[in-house]
Image (cartoon, rainbow, N blue to C red):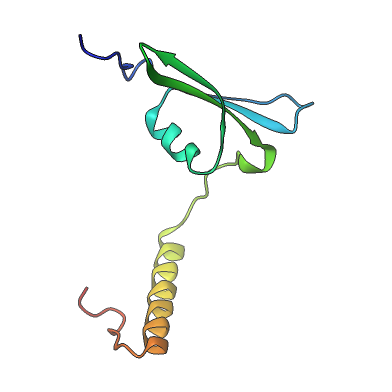
Length: 107
């Protein structure tokens, strides 16, 4: 018999916090989210089905989660940022003594 695994529709992540609490409560049944959180957070609850881990719950400090409006970057700002990063990369290569390429040259 094949081991049970959740379908894409069954995989979910739920984030919850009340104003009175100082932590976020995060429940997930997404393997990708579990792998990322396991690197720096400890699961407070583990859900199993047929012996396999199918969900985890984490309590995260309030400072770990930030909800904000997406930043809008214009093409001009993006181009300036690209040039700034190329210049920084060239300066780092020069500091290491390796030759760099000129901005706007072949990539």
